[in-house]
Image (tube, one colour):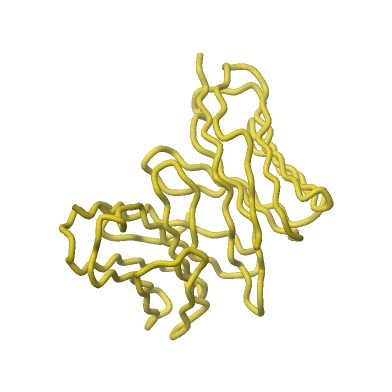
Length: 112
Length: 114
């Protein structure tokens, strides 16, 4: 069973607030990812990291930023949240090789 | 740019009958994944298909991969209510030195009715 944790699970905030979504994994995986998913829709890659101090933007342009200071931790930050940021954000990790991604439970963000 | 298309997008099933979900992708790849997502939940890995002709089976679900046709199928045998969920296929682009970047299809929402 995968050990990847996201907090908060649900967040409702007002426009203009700064938020950080936390993602941690205890599997020692080098590769971590953030996907954005609107309800019932496909997943879009917004950020990924192949190791400490390595971050790249994904396919879907996002105003969020990420950091990877420790292997197990890959937080996502929005400096000024807007209603268009309302979505579910899924964190995932893999050790590479076969490349099977393990997903966290997701953070559902609502910006009013 | 890799595109992954699933069909149908919605599948209403009768219990006990067989159905197939199709996943087409646009560029060469030999790594394809199937995931299941229950409403409000995260994604659960179902199958990892790593070569042409690969076939994996788990319970009532069977997945196969034809890399030449760029097609994967997820076959459901004798559907039961517990299989109601959204099913996603994903293809690994494996670009660059590191790879392991998955592109997901739009999902197939499955509803199994008695």
